[in-house]
Amino acid sequence: MASKASTKLQAAIDFGISNTDAVALVAGEWRRWTRPYSGQPDAELVRAILADGDVDLAALSQLAVTGGRHRLLPAQIGQCKVIGVGELPAIGRGGQALAGLGEPRSTPILVISAGSGTAVVAARGNDYQHVTGAAVGGGTMLGLGRLLLQTVDPSEIDALAQQGNANEVDLSLADVVTGPIGSLPADATAVNFGRLAREGIHVHREDLAAALVTLVGQVIGLLAINAARAQQIERIVIIGHMTDMPSIRRVLSSVGQYYAASIDLPENAGYATVLGALLYTSTPE
Image (cartoon, rainbow, N blue to C red):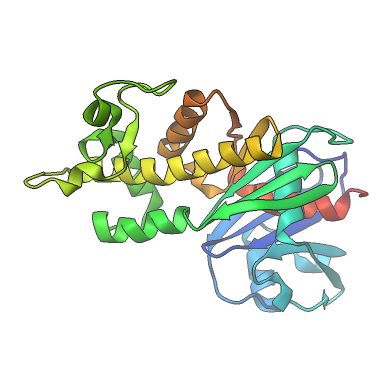
């Protein structure tokens, strides 16, 4: 994680739909942790979340908060000032940090937040603009995972997907047009889940998982590439907890290769938004 040099205690919380993420800078060392969605934020929940990371709210002069429900918090808890950060600057600033952009962050990047849904933010210096998005994301994967795989555990879906073959469920270009098209190889997906429309198809659970991950990853990847080209931005950075899954990272990388696009998949990208909130409040804008 990147930030300006500092040894003071700093912390931030991102109240997401599926996860609550937190980061803290303690004596110059970064800590990061997460917990499942725990309900509406209030002072007691804030204290509990910080305690998970061995951070005492009373030791903070200010706390940065972001996420859809952060506005429910008061402006101050005890002696700690609570500073709300909109999701667009939090996403954009976090993407810039994980992309390794130093000051003045003049290189434009497109930050894709792949969480429960997908948001696309153009980050140009200190300007953060919502470009587009999609209702397809991790929530889609888990919802369909319940129906198709009888699980909503991302780790289980990921493990199954890595063992499966999506083309046992999807139709490939080889199936549809008997060969490659342009830069797309013959085994590239032509129709997601298209093979299931045929009668008498027996599908293994692993193959269903691979096809599900492929569907979600391809939607995110293609959305990112098309948005970047529309915005005339060359560099794409994908953040969010979906990138914790090696199977999703593999799909995103393949989409980038097919279309000769630069897609960055930084480590610890699930914490980018909460990191962005902290940096946005601690770095002069």
